[in-house]
Image (cartoon, rainbow, N blue to C red; front, side, top):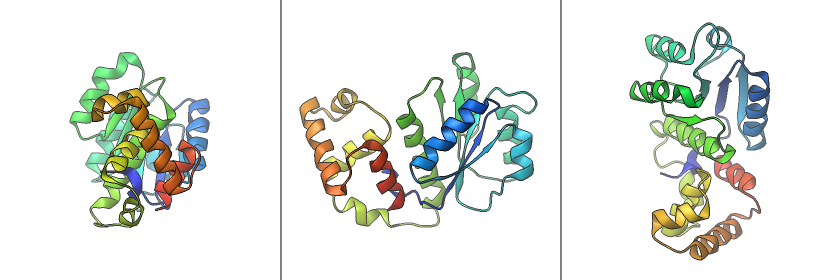
Length: 202
């Protein structure tokens, strides 16, 4: 399913004890038209975050005090079904896999590509609203694109390079680049960042 359905009013919560990471991710999401709130600890998130709106959580696994996994468990106990995207260091991958088994939306290993993170976040937000808004406004946007262009768009928003997209779709890199150009033209954008904003606003 394409990420075009994530609403601009959705909120991305970022919980990480590293101030530089929090600031960078907050700016990344706001640049793409998303509301972002950042917290320096799991405890601060539990105390201050309002989970009554459409949202998702970008969560560091290893933090002082309450860990990312512990926060996931706390949210489950409270019945909060917020989609979680874990960000993790190499040594924490087995833990991240366990978190996904317990219901997390996904995880990315540091250092990660911004587009890959954006792709996971938009998909997580789309899943969060999908149950309440079937047949949502993304249909209008998708009607502008062919079936193949939608397949390419989904992978572009996931941060995949043209060569990987070509391999997955069994087409040439040149054909992928042609479709990318057509998508940009049809949606009136000139960069991937603008493409995210258009998809999020649709």
